[in-house]
Length: 154
Image (cartoon, rainbow, N blue to C red):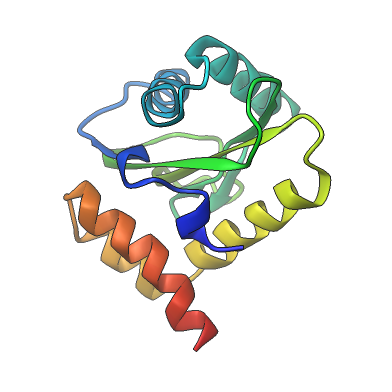
């Protein structure tokens, strides 16, 4: 599995400001709707349900919100870089500015977990996060995310 297989270039966005975690999840829902045709309100509802189980802010300014949906066939992702970090109830209590949302079919057992592990490994790399934070162009952000894995594999 590769990030390039789950993240379309049009599913990458820079958001100048999100007033709250809820607003950010709405932005994520709109982004997956635009990029993949996913029902935005179902995506937001599923993300909110998942967040209610426990926050998906994994630390170091990174959040990995994820959810399972009925109307998709493959795991897909969306990435948002926030110009102004927000509180995401992260495990280290640090505000979040790198958000990679993952959406999987209801019956995607191992595939969903593999995608989550892949994204988590990629965003644990300090150099990758630094590059992401230093850029504001969605195409460049997509390239950084998709090439990071190729470098790790080499």
